[in-house]
Amino acid sequence: DFITLKLTQSSDMERIGVITPGLDIRLSPNVESATRLGFSYRFISFGIRFVPKFFSDNDDDALKGKTKSGGINVGFNFRHWIQELTYTRTKGYYLENTPEVDPTWTPDSPYIQFPGLSFTQYEGSTAYNFNPDFSVNAIVTQSERQLKSAGSFIPVLFYRYYINDHKTPPEPGGFNQKGNNLELLLGAGYHYSFVVKEKIYFALGLTPAAGYVFSRITNRYETYREFARQKNFIFRLDGRAGIGYNSKRFFTGIYMRFAESAYREEKTSVMVENDRTIFHAVIGFRLNAPSWIKKPVDAVSRTIGIK
Image (tube, rainbow, N blue to C red):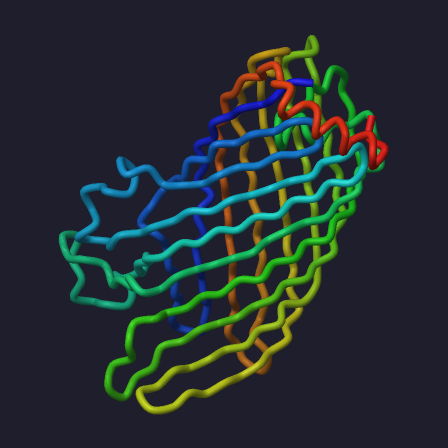
């Protein structure tokens, strides 16, 4: 019955890795964390992600380049069905392993930078919670409280469309590249919350998933373009752990989440990795909902049969 307002500081920044025989390419944005402001009421959640200037305008822009990042997310979390949709965009990367690529590099030299490289993604998941006594909202949106220990088997469909685009004009004899990728994966995992005295909880969960990634690669030369298509089997492992305090009005917590995926490019020895180890620090409050929010949401809830 309350509006949930929360502030999250998260290390959820997309990194890109391409593993080839004799040479690895590991690209990273020059931002360590992002801030998210979240709002939840009943079955609806919404968030805005941004990088404050005091995180992005740091002292090493000359060494690693400048990164801009932002996004939004929306969720519809019912008693059994859980729906999440996210949009993020990050621009400006540098080569983490520049010392391996450039033997003349020294610690006071700039890293190899890709200011025109952007990563844009539209990501979603649809899941089903078999145990209504297990609250996904208590650990994801913090719009509910888990009062007793419980767990649930949760199958999930992951889908993601992402674009990595290096828009810098190609040098003479060279090219730049754009990749359009669609991931479809089906997974199933188990999640459990250990609750102590109704307010302190420990949350754990693990979800393996497998599916396919469909890619369209565009190599842009000075005077022409080349296109290639691939379909590759992909495996992904999602995990979550956290500890928190959740009272009627105030809540806080620290969470760790990882999402590891990898696939081998069709007819090559190239391995593409996408590793995301994410730490969240959350603090928030619950406030009484004003009538201009409560009435329309309650009307929708009655219409679709949500208690």
